[in-house]
Length: 523
Image 1 (tube, rainbow, N blue to C red):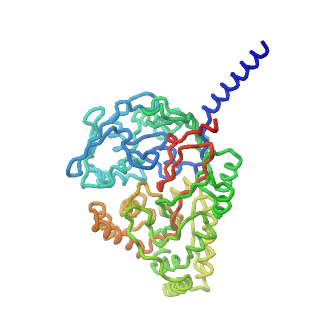
Image 2 (image 1 turned 90 degrees about the vertical axis):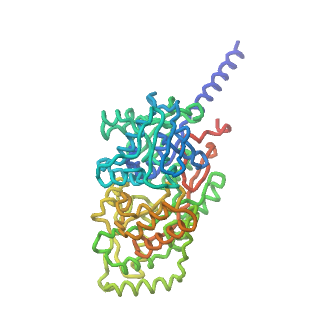
Image 3 (image 1 turned 120 degrees about the vertical axis):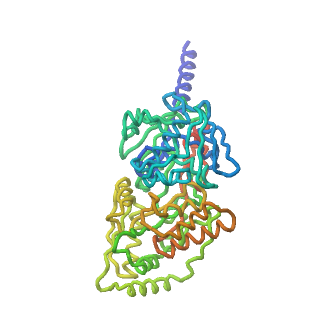
């Protein structure tokens, strides 16, 4: 009898242990507080990471980063590349069990292109017929219509080889009209945010974490291995590392600067570093009179030693940048290297500074604004020190919480020099250049050059050598105008717990929780 009781107890314990293992919550570091969970209004990478768990567009990335159909089962494109017909999946459902319909996508595109929505990425939908006029606030029929409940037609103004890739972005994800009409901007709160992705928002504790649980109505719910996910706000990379080493996180959003060598020794089996389609730069607010002088802007750029920054300040596998587009980007134009020695660059910077009429005895005061993080502060201090040493310039560092920083940068009223960066939405050099075109909501520098815009348009409509020539010409004009200071090309870098399987590094650094699972050995 006693043996039977012990055996029963052991069996029950094993059952409970198995259940607990199956119910493990994935703990993810996610960087800053998401600026929004409204797919049409979100801009930051931390928001996009969560949105890829909550929603699914017509197209999406698979686990390896390849473009595949998402909410659409299939797509047919006409011979001229102007008409796309999407057949939606019959089993597509929102988290409340309601159907995903073609009308939902019509409403979402209309909403994204309504100036009142102020969608920062709305320009991604500009190839759609009528979209450019809508973005200018003009009345025009939009080339999107529901043929029936499961068939959606999209017409373009001109062929775009990258159009399907744009439909995987949050700006093109479907939202429920009823939820927005009932709750307005409050539709993004837990219990109200009803997406069609693998997970649904359960709880949001501001500046702490967001918790998601598996969506039982998701079309692929049976293949989703992890029941709940918690995205932690981890603005401080050093604190994030400590939490990983304490076992509180299964996956980090990034690594603290300057610790790559130590982490390679201490976490060789958990460290994942790979090239990224991404560039860190400092942007100039070209609408600010203080920065009218092209000579001053060039001097500020030449005074910064990129090699020192990536070796001693960032130190996580980044590469010095003298161009906007990283060479790892498919089809990237090959730009000339810096060419000059650090000494030559400094001498030229001083000549330009003096030639622009600035006096080293009465130092110029420049403001450098960045979103709060240890890495950004370290970099800001290093840049300020270089400007002081080479040009005698005084720099005032201003840091802001991410949401405030994004709004300030976008307004372009008080900013002077600001932290910028671009992680490509999809693997195409054009994606780096279009944000600098006139009228683009992401054009925080205020760059305006009709010739640049024409070259970008030519690259978008052409292929082969003609496309490469247009891309090279557009990037060169942007660099020659000193509209920004490219500093380094990012690497994607994470610590991944040995308990977690299914993580694949790829340059876009997209890692939906749907494709992750806890390894059998950890159960």
